[in-house]
Each structure stands twice: as structure tokens, then as C-alpha cells.
Image (cartoon, rainbow, N blue to C red):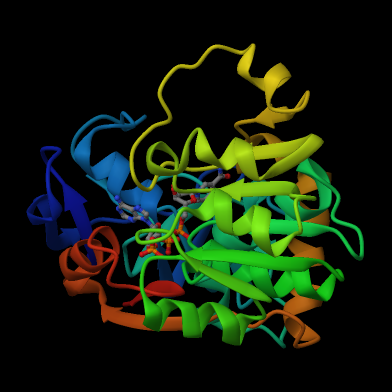
Length: 325
Ligand SMILES: NC(=O)c1ccc[n+]([C@@H]2O[C@H](COP(=O)([O-])OP(=O)(O)OC[C@H]3O[C@@H](n4cnc5c(N)ncnc54)[C@H](OP(=O)(O)O)[C@@H]3O)[C@@H](O)[C@H]2O)c1
């Protein structure tokens, strides 16, 4: 038996229950992982509250990300062996001391990357990778707006955007967070709970506006985000920390400057193993080279997953959160 955090009925953080579960031997295509760190992400809260239905029904083990050591491999698995250091983002079952996982969706962890870094970045860092390199390919000299720039993805987008030569404008919820965003490389910060962020962006850019807006906040920043984008620019609405963006009339994109808009999600960008490895390796390269630091500022014991969710949802965190089994 191993310790895990299970959800028997969906709801608030209190439904996260610490208990013992059985982990079987790996079947075909599976590896068994002894986890050293488990990532905590917004998506975990969506499953916990039932906004995203659990594909395995109830009860389910919460969590979608982790890093650790391979302790057993299924009969037909040839890419991994016992003792390999691995990381993943994927199916539920992450908040546990040990778990089974599909070998096809796991990646080997380079020695330069720690377990905690990996658990703090597989989802957030690969999301930043596709947003900056594929959804909109950021070029030197471009101006990008990153909402919630002191957050987990926000700090990675900011650092990586600077590394690519962009001018980064970041919105933040407090003065303390503005300092964190500046330390990550933001050229300009905007206190978007107090200031009109679109007016500030216009001011900062001398009316040229941004090439792309990366928006993981959702409801509260729409449609104003569109006023921050230059004609033919890109609106990448990748998350809903404040709630879902309401339905809107597509003609608005014409009047705001023939804008492009997308609601991307990581799963589609890493659907093939080739894309998964390319995305993960690009991330490992910038982290190993010290160009992007993964701020794992919040570490909790596995049994304290409830507190991790409370902190994440109350805007009390900056950077990544991990549970340590
Ligand atoms: N599409 C994808 O592929 C993908 C992948 C991973 C995550 N996501 C999404 O990306 C977003 C950011 O994820 P993250 O893990 O890096 O989180 P995070 O940015 O560390 O935390 C969310 C931040 O959003 C801001 N926020 C604004 N309004 C909020 C509200 N009403 N409630 C809570 N937070 C609010 C807060 O920053 P301030 O206090 O500075 O406002 C908060 O710290 C989430 O929406 C997540 O679902 C998308």
C-alpha cells in the first residue's frame, strides 16, 4: 500500500483525502514510478470540483504531474528501465507516493534537472514553450503582454520571453507580485486590479500595442485584452483562473484590428511522442542553461494537498507548487 490523495466526491479542498491505496504491477506499455515530487496545478482544482469530469469516475487520485524513479516496467516497455529518472504530465493519479503511468507519455529527466524542478514545470513549462514557440513565435524586439506575470506560468513566460529578446509587459495583482515579476524580467508591470491595463499598455508602447497577449486569467481580463493587441496580432487565451471567458461576437476581432485568437491547450501540442519529446527537450535546454529558472516556492507534504489547493485558489502563491511524498 502507498499513500495517496483521493477524491470520493467532488467539491472544495476538503474533499482531498489522504489514504492508502494499492498500486499494481505495471501492465503492457506501463511503468511504475516512485514519485519524488508531484506538481500542483489549476487543472487539479478543476477535476477536484467536478468542472472537468474525471475520466475514471469516483473515487480518483488527484494530480496530473510528477517526477521520480522507475521501479518496474511492463512486459513490452523498451524505452525505460528500472532506475531511470522520469517526469510526466498527463492522467490523474499524480498525488501519490507511487503510481503507474503510460511509458509512451513519460520523458527521461536529464541529470541537470531536479525532481522538484521537473514536478514544478512539466505542465507550466511545456505550456510556456508552445505558447512562445508555436502559438505565436516570439521574435526579438516584439512586445508581449503576460497576464498574472508573477504566477507559475507567468514567471516562466516572462523569463523565456526575455531570453527570446521580447519586451515583456506583465500584469500582477499586488505590489509584492510586481517585484517578483520584475525579478523574472518584466520590463514593465501593471497593477491590473487598480489600473486600466489597456490604457497603460497603450501608454507604454506609445500606441503600437503588443504582438501577442498571453492570457491565463480569462473572464476578468476579457475583452480588454483585445485592446492591447496590434492589428493582425494574436490573442492566446490559455486559461481561466478568474472564470471562463463569456461567449462573444466574432466580429469584434475585425473591429479590434483583424486579430487572431485561439484557446490552446497543451494536450494538442504534445499529442505525438515526437512533439512531446521536442517540447520537453526545448524546456530542459533552457532550464539546464539557466535561462529559465523554475521557482518552486511552495512545498507541501503529500498529506497537505488540501492546503496547497487553498493557497493556489486564493491567489496566495507565486511560482510553482509541489507536494513531496
Ligand atoms: N492551456 C494550457 O495548456 C494550460 C496549461 C496549464 C495551465 N493553464 C492555465 O493557466 C493559468 C495559470 O496557471 P498557473 O498554474 O500558472 O497559475 P498561477 O498563475 O500561478 O495562478 C493564477 C494567477 O491568476 C491570477 N488571478 C486573477 N484572477 C484570479 C482569480 N479570480 N482567482 C485566482 N487567481 C486569479 C492570480 O495572480 P494575480 O494575483 O497576480 O492576479 C493568480 O496567482 C490557469 O488558468 C491554468 O488553468 C493552461
